[in-house]
Length: 246
Ligand SMILES: C[S@@+](CC[C@H](N)C(=O)[O-])C[C@H]1O[C@@H](n2cnc3c(N)ncnc32)[C@H](O)[C@@H]1O
Image 1 (spheres, rainbow, N blue to C red):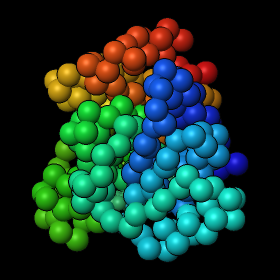
Image 2: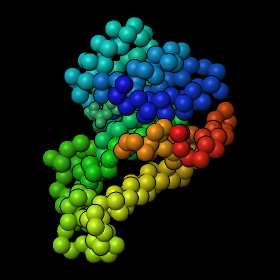
Image 3: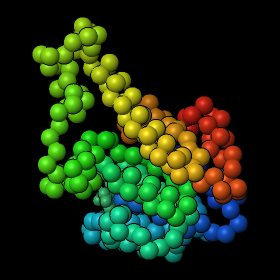
Image 4: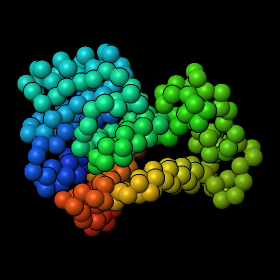
C-alpha cells in the first residue's frame, strides 16, 4: 500500500486520541488528495466522522468514488482551499504531505479550533512561494528569488565551485553531509511549527513515522491543546518510545 508506514503511524496516534474521548471525533484531513490517508483511517475508525479537504476537483471526485465503493458512510469531501475551511468545527486535524505552507494553514486552523493535530509535512521547498505571498503550491504569485545557499537543490550545493569545508573534502562530494544538513534544517522548521503551537497553549511532540529511515518526509508532528485534560500525557507517552514510532 502506498504510504503504508505513514498511515500506520497516524493510526497509532489517532487511536490514542480517540480512545479517551467519549464522543465520536470529527476528523479533518487537510490536503487529502484521493484519500490515501483518509480512507484507511475512516475504515479503522468507523465511529468517527471524516472530512477530506482538497482543492483539486479530480482528486475529490476520486476520493468520493472510492469512499462509496468501500461503503464508508463516515466520509465527506469538501473541495476548497484549506485556508477557506473556516466554518466547520472539528476535533482533530490531519495533514499528510500537504504542500509547503498548506501544512501551516492546517495547523493554524487546528489551533483556532483548539483541535488536536497530527501532521507529517511535505518537503519544505515550496515554502519559498509563500514567503512573498504566493500560494502553497505555485510560484505564479510569488516574486521571491532564492538567495540563501540552503535554497538550492542539495546536489547543486555539493558540486558548486564555491563549496568549502568538510562536505567539499569528502570523496563522495559531500552528499551524505549535505543531505544530513538538509534533514537537520527540515527538523528545525518542524520544531518551529510546534513551538508556534506551544505559544498558543499546546503540548507538542516531534516524532518519526514507523520505518522512517526508509523514506523521506517522515516527520510526525503531534499537538494537543493543554486544556483538554483527557489528552494530558498523550504527547509524553508517545515520546516515551524514544521519539520514534518504530
Ligand atoms: C502531496 S499531496 C498529498 C495528498 C495526500 N494527503 C497523500 O498523502 O496522499 C498534497 C495535496 O494537498 C493539496 N493541497 C495543497 N495545498 C492545498 C491548499 N492550500 N488547499 C487545499 N488543498 C491543497 C494538493 O492538491 C494535493 O492533493
